[in-house]
Image 1 (spheres, rainbow over the protein chains, first blue to last red):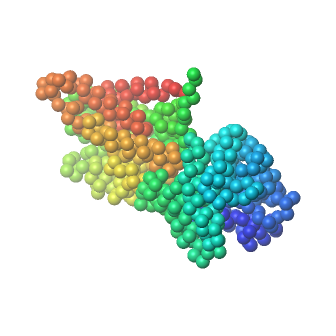
Image 2 (cartoon, helix red, strand yellow):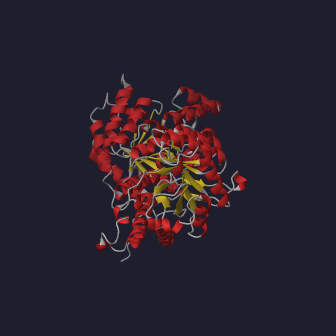
Length: 264
Length: 322
């Protein structure tokens, strides 16, 4: 199970401030802290803190300051592909592009870029019309993304399909549909594409978020989830991911398996 | 019609471990030997890197061993002189490395002192220039004393020292760290204990590239398939980026094959089994070559003729099929 730490995001006040002032410290603090928590990738998102035209330069800066303190690969998170490309240019390790919807124009921009920089791609099962209500329609978008990977020469293992989970307190019916979509995505090709969720979304504005997050994550892993963008410093959540890997016989048991999961 | 081979894409590789140290590195060996490093299942050059060839170590003991007389014949002139025995293994029989077992330390046997044992190691180091593997007598308490003395006497040589086990690893790890040696982590045909022991050793501060896994094996006909599947699982684990299993593996083939009934029963008693001499050689050879296929990097052997056959097999397997 791949943990993508969500904390370096301009939506958080400390990171937003740091971006405006070009203060590397909060980014570096969270890079190290998330790595210690068990993150395997670090999500990097400027959020709305930076005006559009400054974003490429901001992503380049963020990548550089994070790489000063952490050797984790990065997950560049933006809808601005010029910003992502500016970040990719300075990434020392193969990065992840977060994300591209199943829209032809954006696919044509993102997939060749991913191949060029040896990056993985998170493909969203949606288009301009929005997020589908059921698993079948999510799968149709996933199929378009799988075909695009094939067309542009992106290795299937480098495509992460995100079937898009919605908050369970307002869109409860989506949770089982997403689980079904994960199962079906795994049958689309051989080798199958990987799957990812922006997990924290499932518990937006609910009172006991950690409980919902870790329960849903365990269920999703059993359906074939490969990666999740989460709070990497929620120890119970990370331990749940480690335990799920053991119970699915994906990694070899030893008494210190949680610790190994965090430090590998 | 052309068929495209489906190839595995592994994420990682087996770690490398260096045996021995040259004078520049603080030892006295003429060369070092690197084991491990493979990025694929054994000898599948078409799928990934096969970095270093497996190594054969011939066994030397500090007292006359209770081996089958047919094997002992080869060393009859050098018992009671481990240095000459080691020299013979290297010069006559082409051993890559010497595996020195300090059986004489056994309290039930010769009960040699730690100092005497350390002197044996020094003598062997002086007699040959290849790297050394040194283990005790399998009496836990005595071995802790003996190996501490050995580690100190050979400080800087980067010996491969054994055997660390789940219930007894701390003093050996400490000795390796202080005197710059590598360690054999031995687990009883158990992948979970194997992994846990590597973690425990690493937690004490010994680097992962100083650990060699001894999964313990069974000889041909005596549980070799268990060893095979454990080793295969460890190898696949390391290729899937399980750093706590990504160490090269050592197999004590000479000992396990040598105690099989088939390697000892006389030709007279079992005429249908064929000549004992051939049978003995083949038993050790087949045990070794099977475990090479499971990912063994360091093969401990006794019979010089078997070692010769295994060496030939390794040479053939190292020819690239890419």
